[in-house]
View 1 (cartoon, rainbow, N blue to C red):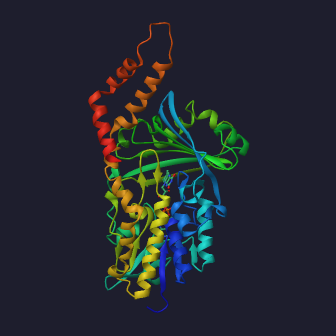
View 2: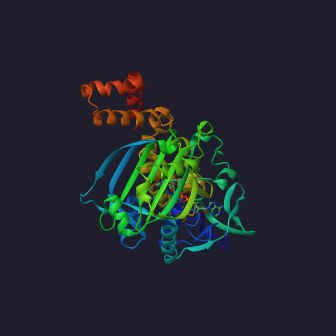
Length: 429
Ligand SMILES: Cc1cc2nc3c(=O)[nH]c(=O)nc-3n(C[C@H](O)[C@H](O)[C@H](O)COP(=O)(O)OP(=O)(O)OC[C@H]3O[C@@H](n4cnc5c(N)ncnc54)[C@H](O)[C@@H]3O)c2cc1C
């Protein structure tokens, strides 16, 4: 087609920016269209990037990218309204750059990534929404944005968790079922750098990733998160929507109560609220992966359901990056063969099948179902807290053997439930 780009990318999140970077680096003509005013302006994340997939595309990226802190401290807390039992892991070992993970803020990070793509020759238009995908003879040939028709041999849909265009094409099933979605609310709280170091016991540019199960999501599927940035804290809750109508609290109220928990309040004391954001998280893993390729079109990142909630962590950014790269490589291969049909672009599916993305999504395919078990977020955090309280309470009465104390609290949840959930949990991971 005359005056056509090799590819048009819809959305300048991580998936879209990387697709553009990889394409432009190989000399392809690529245009990225982003509805926000700049890359990252509409994007939200908890805050932790596992660096491996970006390291593969841009080796040594952490030296120049606006990352916040390298994570060396991991904490997981089982929380009830008035207790917290925390597992604290400090990793002082040397890691290769491929193993490292970082906290980041998307507003800065995505802009940097888009600038890298532009340096390679990608064209970028922001502040404009793509309204339609143009089809000719059954094949996608371009997009309609702001009343203009723009043509390309391939369109990469990197539109995030609400893939309206993918749905219009009939590739993505409309997500009417609440049990495939969670909602996240997050605050960015400013604190002096030395205060963050002191309160979280981290040195220099090291940082802490802290996850909370139990009361933050009001006992529903989900939990709280806290990530340390250079001079801010990312603090939020994620809550599954499948049972939200039975919740006694709204999600903003959950976040408010989480902030006021005795374990959290002193950590953010004196902090200044800089930003409040809310966003949806795809939760169903492999079960919500749509048709990924069709004639002239590919779907990447959250739009393709490439997000993993493994209970103790949400991972979507490294999957968005790897799938953006795979989509770009497939377009480059199709360009060589001058075949942008579904068959010509199908290298994308092959690359994904061979990558950690499909393997991990398959590995954790039982997890979304397992996580809908209310005991995990409700009774088990309480059980752990009760055991700890019994262990550390001395009131003058004769002590019980520890074994008896533990069994007493396990009995409250039910031995059969514990065995059943234990087996199911192991099978799910
Ligand atoms: C609360 C929360 C916590 C999370 N925590 C983590 C975490 O700690 N670690 C992790 O790895 N992942 C985490 N995730 C998941 C992660 O943020 C996402 O998986 C990731 O952002 C997906 O990137 P993406 O590029 O696919 O989509 P997005 O980043 O959503 O980008 C999509 C882009 O497309 C644009 N767009 C959409 N439609 C159009 C259109 N029609 N025209 C033009 N532009 C359009 C949007 O404006 C946006 O910029 C979290 C998510 C949430 C909500």
